[in-house]
Structure formats: structure tokens, C-alpha cells
Image (cartoon, rainbow, N blue to C red; front, side, top):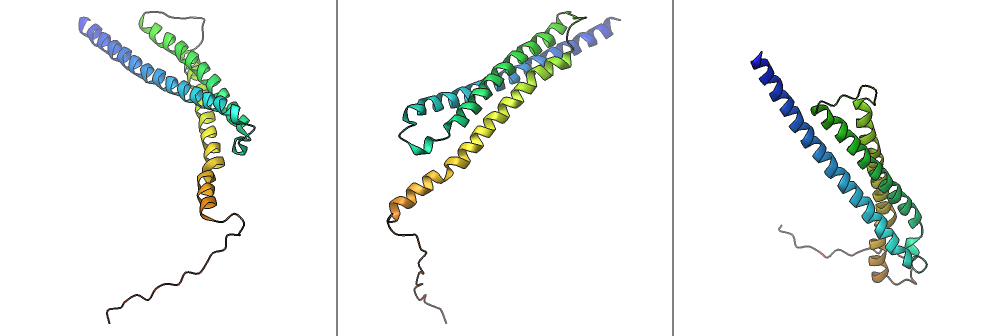
Length: 165
């Protein structure tokens, strides 16, 4: 009987360590998600002062909305992760909530807002890349080409290359 108890105790300790490690990774991920959305939102707010003078900033409202909603969902995801942490760690302390929510509900409450926040952050980044990827190219071409003349490809005369015949 003692041997079975020791094996059970070792399994419980291993599960406890796994739970701590898994939740630490989840908390770090949610923290990074909070920071990324907050930085995007802060960057958009800093750009608002130049909104009327810089035409490339038209449409910045979509980024404010995406980063703002991503930040809100990251906060909800953090709270869900805290609930998940309490539920999972409470099981190791002998806490048994007979009438409460199921453990799967804690996982859903933690993961669903995090996934939504990740999608919103990814959407903001994709839209930003799509909207501004030609910005650098257009400024390079504008400095190299006379703005009054249309861009027409010119034939290039290739020099005669020496041959080894």
C-alpha cells in the first residue's frame, strides 16, 4: 500500500510541475500579447496628432479599433488564464468545486479570448503591411523620376560582349 501511495504522490507532483510550467508559458504569452496590442494602440494614438497633415494616415481608425479590441480581448484572456490557474492549482490543494464550472470551461475562458486577440493583432499587422508596403517604393521612385514626365520603360542597348571564338 505504501508503494502505491508513493507512486501516486510522484505522479501528483509531476502533474503539479507540468501545470506550473504550462501556466507560466501561458501567462508569458498573454503578457506579450498585452504588450504588443498596447504598443500598437499607443503608436496609433501618437500618430493622431499628425492625422490632418499626413495623407498616409487616413484610415488609421481601423488600426485603433483592431489594437484596442485586441487589447481588450488580451485582458479578458489574462483574466481567463487566472481562473484557469486557480482551477487547476486548486485541484492539487484538495479543492473540489462540486457545483461550479467544469475545468474545460476554464480552459475555454482562457484560450478563446487569447485566440481572438491574436487574430486581431495579426489582422492589424496584415492590413498595415498591405497599406504601407508601397510607401517606401513610391518615395524611392519619386526621387528618381521627374514627377512631370510619365514613367515609360526605355530600351537599354546592351554593349557588345567579347567572345572567345
